[in-house]
Length: 128
Image 1 (cartoon, rainbow, N blue to C red):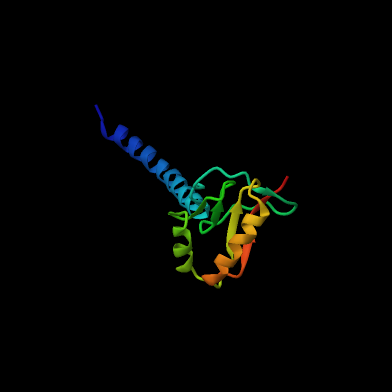
Image 2 (image 1 turned 30 degrees about the vertical axis):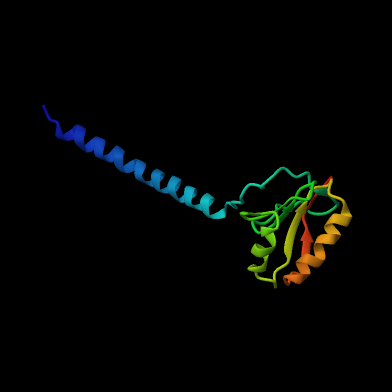
């Protein structure tokens, strides 16, 4: 009995799978690097519809519910303004408001944002 031949053939088969494992690993790394991970919305919002490009809200978005509740990152309610004060004021602030929110309530929020140094806002919308 010659057991050396079977061992050699088995070693060749094991070596043939190494390139496939390398390719799978590289694909995994590629998809992890190109994926965009966004945190879930703090509450359900029916966004405003408008013609234009459909975009996902960035992670530093101010969320406004139909009843006027505010959320920014982990802050809720009036604590949002303290969290926004620590934000870089040079970047525009994306706002994702519910379509049921009256425009007057959104307009009333703008002076409070201006007080903490946020002058440039962007309303996040979806296509109808």
